[in-house]
Length: 172
Image: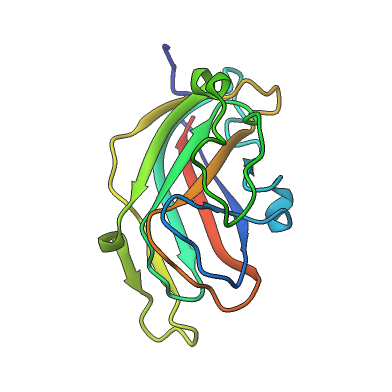
């Protein structure tokens, strides 16, 4: 795909709700309440708000307000993925083959990417993984893309609620 950069940038964020029970490696992270996500399908609304509905993913920043520092994988899709992705349930078998054609890329967030924010009351952790920029496009007329966050560790967040915030930065 050819993308002509128009010279602007856009940062979009979603709040990711979590449950208070331990996650296992391969579990989906994200409850139905976070930023209007649909059982683990995280909407990055108007992420690609240019005429081409395309751009380059330049940055990923994840805040963990419970300082769990778990490894994770972020799967990015050009449209809302089909199937069910319930929070704290294995992704294995849930990823429909039809979604592979709209899979834009995978960003790995390693345990070593996490840093505790100095002086934060709740020991807030921030991850900014290093990855090759990913050319992305949206199949949605609003420029929305979707993400599914998958646990690569065994985090246990304090109770249910919005304990994670995920931001994506794009060059448009």
